[in-house]
Length: 156
Figure 1 (cartoon, rainbow, N blue to C red):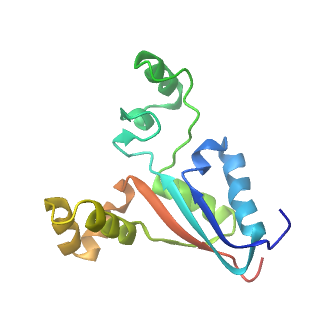
Figure 2: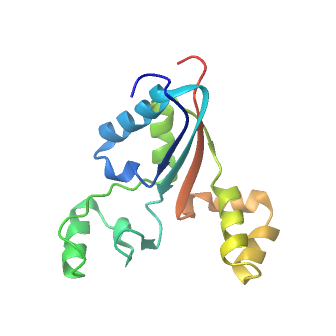
């Protein structure tokens, strides 16, 4: 696509599939390149520390060192090769900075809305809705899906 082609870009659980860190950085740079000035991007990224890995429905798969993930897949008879590279919160935010992206982590707000829609009245939903923001901020690195609003910088 040509430069400044889109007002809105949505990348939902894509970046972990595009390859190594350099490829992921290129993915973020391409998002910035194709957005119009003032454009926005919804970026959802699976957190490495999610308990259940959503692509294969295996507990703790992404917690393992890279060299053991494919072995676990084969032993669980879920596949041959783990082709994902999920990040921790600080890693994805470092990549966003390196890509010169203007971003806002909206994971807490998204989690509250998701719980209200999918688990209304549940103990977890009530707890999260009532917890002080200062407490929830410390739990942000554990949210299973990290969600960002990325804006096109006016200086790029």
